Length: 211
Image 1 (cartoon, rainbow, N blue to C red):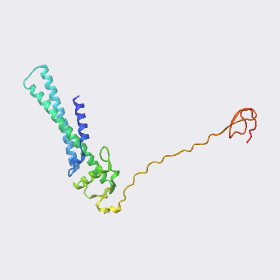
Image 2: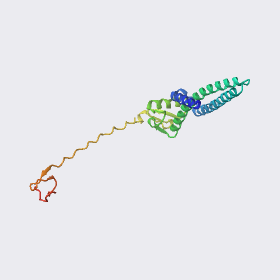
Image 3: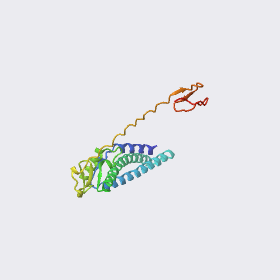
Image 4: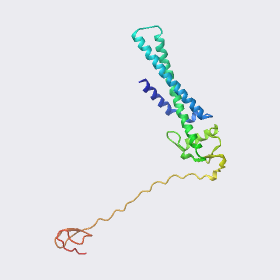
């Protein structure tokens, strides 16, 4: 129960953390620090829960001096570490998104902004803002944004007039199917049976049909 509650709070805080709020110089090292802190406080949750559990069992079996203090310590440790672990887990997840974005940019000399994957719901404006923030903080040294559509190495010396904005994909065209005319039904002059417009002989009496 406690573990489920902790994970639900962690997911909620992760959704509320904006990666843009934690952009720092040397993002890769900062992301590792956040990951380590989230693990440390995760261990603190386990320690606090264990102290609370042992104190409760001891109090139920036989009251001993120090048992109330153990229970209180376990409760405070569990709550405090749970809060801090959720906070650092959320920040670590956001930092990993920025690190992944940096690696995507560095994988090529030039990349269209729209081809970069960033955030749970990628958007051109949000990705562009993140790339500019990473460049301004020195995480993407040697890169620049050109015409707000492409991120490229400065050594390429791209100019805005060299960049053609990508056009949106054309909307699919509706396909109109022409209906085929229905064959006419004609009566046989010999027996009165009906036959189709393309039939040459009556299917009832075998008489040759007039054309």
